[in-house]
Image 1: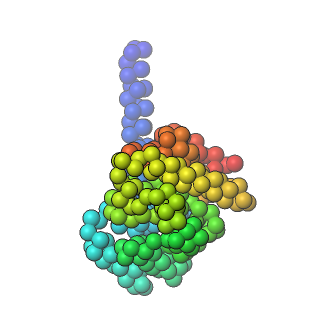
Image 2 (image 1 turned 30 degrees about the vertical axis):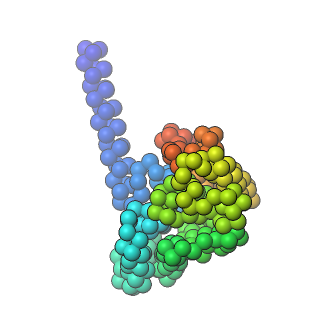
Image 3 (image 1 turned 90 degrees about the horizontal axis):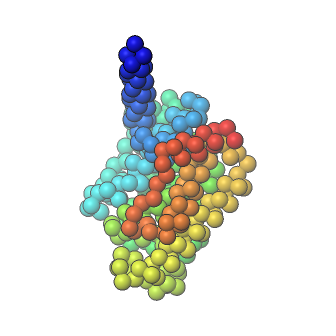
Amino acid sequence: LATRYALQHAARITSMDKTIITRLNDEAAGAGVGLGSDEYYASRFASPQIRYPAWCVLALKTTIEEIPLKVSDPGVARLKLAWWQDETSRTNHPLLKIGEQLGLDPNLLHTAVDNLSASLDSEFIGAQWKNDAAKQDWFSAAYTNVYQMIGADSALAIRLEESRSLLRLRDQLLVNICRFPEDKLTRYGIDLEGLLDSAQQKVRQQLILEELTSAAAKLNEALVERAERRGPLATYATLTLQRLKETITDGGQLLERKVDLTALRKIWIAWRCRWF
């Protein structure tokens, strides 16, 4: 009898786990974010009034910014970016209707998509920042309106996206997108080809570690200066900051491997940002 009870109890737990996983998968799929992604945990413990708009915005942002990285032909990528700009200018577009239901300003949504797409498109024509100030201006133009849709301040949004862009370094270089300012490349005596050249590994790692350390310090400073340490943006930033720190500890091997946090750590960070 004890054995039978134990087996029945185990079966109930297994069934419960599958039900929970299925529900979470459905929830993530419906929101357009990947289950277990930083975007998913950024809003997982927020109230429904905040959770779904934030998921909608982050899913849209991720979809658009990954176009240049996942489409091998730059011409096709530019057409896809232009398509998003055109589609969100239509007042009857389904995405705008969803945004309205979630309380998002449809005009701001179009502006956000337009600015992000235009900023990404500019990289295909060889635009290169002269220094960090020009780099910050680019991220401000690309992402300020994106985060305004969920009531987030631009200062933290800019530092956050600078950091997340750095974590995608390998994917960017493979499609000839370089987000290092010219003055830093000159100081290290390296160019785009050199960043992918194994013979330049020592110099390359020094540059990458400098950028990682600087990004982590700036993101942490922006978080400390923020009065409200809770909410989706603060959670998203804290998850990103931890990934930066782990990547630095790993030696900054951004071109060799991708460092991510375990699901348990993401849950813990998201939970703490929900209450503390």
